[in-house]
Length: 295
Image 1 (cartoon, helix red, strand yellow):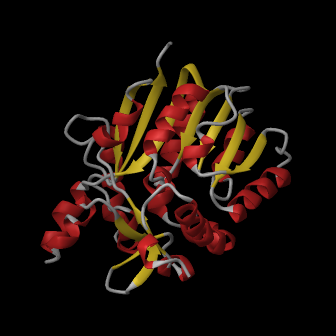
Image 2 (tube, one colour):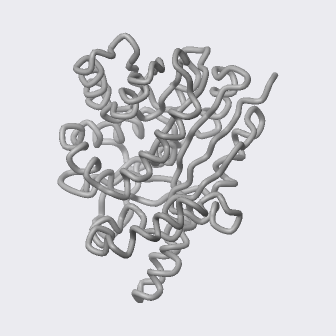
């Protein structure tokens, strides 16, 4: 067992997990959780309408931005759904993840689709993957992968060296501030929940069901300004779009499904206005498109 100095206990469940720090213990802990959920991940997260909407928005942006023959780095490939989708469009993908089981799932998916020549898999945390394998024509990361990376500065520095000038980074992240939660939680008489993401790190489950619901990892939520700051030395922000600003975030999936007739028109409004100045920084998830500045 690890010494008390390297781990900390938080939360009402008394769970023990590593400190949010870029070291082997933290990455191994995160990998172990995703290893245990890899076989059921698509059945759980792939059926979550909220997560799927984020995935479609991010993937569609990638398919519009990247071209056939481009060589793209994916950070946090999961089971390889996006890597294979991009490979199906003729894009070469170096798919990386901290989880060995996720990497294996990605390789098997690519092989099953006959796309193994376009998908290369590597077991690496994001901070390390960003510094290897140059040159890349772009980089892609969907979900809250980079909220689980304690060394975002190294990610940004690494991509500044490995992504070619003019290359595109399509990255999503989870926000400290969610307009939906700021409104709904106080109305539900749970005001503290509305501000829980303002802390330095927040424990979150890695999935909504099964062992993933019980497996808690520390994460860091970032405003768009905080997230983009490390990239500013080498990248320009091309666009910022909020997702889940006026629509329910990931943790409201069951309620969103129950009231689908109400949520659907809100999604249409958000799709039209997600890049508007008043909304773009208020989504529980936001999508950034960055351009690698010419040297």
